[in-house]
Image 1 (spheres, rainbow, N blue to C red):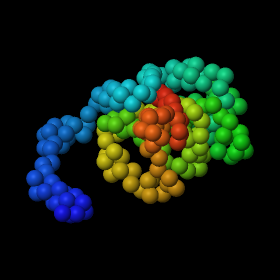
Image 2 (image 1 turned 90 degrees about the vertical axis):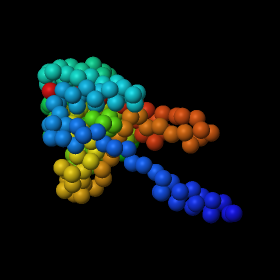
Image 3 (image 1 turned 30 degrees about the vertical axis):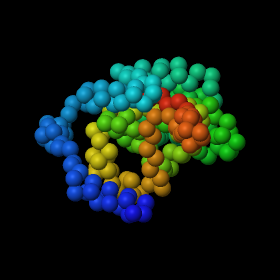
Amino acid sequence: MSVRTAILDRVRHAQRTGRIPAVPREQNSTAAMDRPVASMIERFVAELALLGVESFVESSPDDVHARVKAIVGARSVLAWDARQLPYDVDRVLVGAARGSSLRDVQAGAQIGVTGCDAAIAETGSLVLLSGDGKPRTASLLPPVHLAIVRQTDLCDSMGEFFRERAADIAAAACCTVVTGPSRTADIELTLTLGVHGPGEVIVIVGP
């Protein structure tokens, strides 16, 4: 028997005998769809921790500003435009580069600051739709990515986001899903962070 035949036989056998796990009833209920925001935040933060992402939950815009200022410190910043950043965060980003800045200036930034278009509770993922004032470079070029999440950005699942924002996704030039720091094990099967993007991701959840 050839290798190809053996593989196809295994696939056919799996199709006949495989079982799809049953979805618990509460996940299909209206109550689950109306899950309190606090519960989604708790799950989101827990998933972030598993991904190695540091997160902070703040109770007011002023607390968000203070946290951003403390994290950024003296580092050079590449950020979304002011109108795209939540909680008027731009006012504490003195001298930040933008998507319109010179390429070398953007490449030299030490931390990228963005908002997000969705925060997926079940996976700890951030979804960013590129567009006017929301350059992809801010979340991809700097070694550190700081994302500001509003409670209204939270979605229970990726499926929910796709259903509710289908038109926005179709209109965007690019939809980027960030699930923890960039990582690869392509080189000698050694896990390495920060090869294809930021090696550190920090999330601030605001009110």
